[in-house]
Length: 236
Image (tube, rainbow, N blue to C red):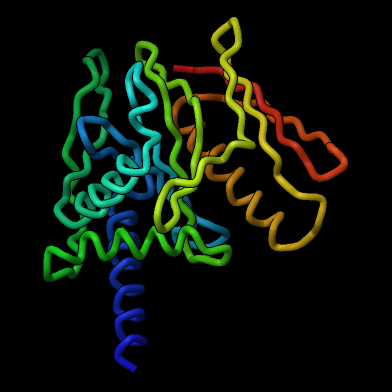
């Protein structure tokens, strides 16, 4: 009975962390700092009002390998939850005829008492993301900075012990600066596996949009499932 209460309490705690804070910012992308790197957090709803996906984009400068290590991803999740708890998020605001500046967000406070709850909630969210039927999925997109543009170079799914590289998602920078993206969105079946693929596709496509890319999609059938191919142009 005690273990069941702990699980229920952790589920409610994580839900409050996400729902209260995401609603406070109307699900617009917000930013936080981890290990000297700025990270965008993009809260994404499913078919209803509940948050079903969280996509992260780390602006890693020229050294994009820094953001692909398991230690970086683990610390990033702790800092994400800490930002929710301690109101450390901010957003970029562009005023007319003025350079971009940063505004600190005032977020709803989560009802969490002890400091250890930060790592506990982070671990719980990672575990849920790693489940095929978890209530939240989290993906991380590593980018390389080219001026103001974030160029995607790789994606991984956040799970309990690491960030699982999505090696079947390919990003390629074209001569004209556009980004070619290719990823499978099915395995040829009509089962839950395809739903997982679609969930991943929606997460990456939504995040690319928030990074100011306009993508033209096309689907092809490889014989073992659908392949999404996109050409994405930076619009900012």
